[in-house]
Length: 106
Image (cartoon, rainbow, N blue to C red):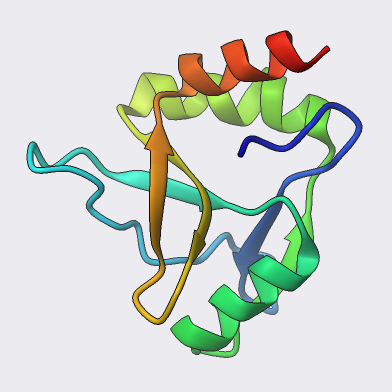
């Protein structure tokens, strides 16, 4: 699931607002993913699993779509969506796939 239009994505970060989360390997080719969640509760579960005094924050969907996703493309990252479970695993998409899903949801 990709955050729907009007629903802000959530991420984990440190107390000083430095984005901080393990960048997990998402595929056999070593492509790395930046994880995001569709709700605060899901992000809080991830922060608890990862520890390190992480907190959760949301960012405006427009900022994520217009800035963070293009940055992830340039840096060669995929986007992890709603990772869950004790090892925080789940689906990862290219930023373009996420943008296409957002456009389809409009």
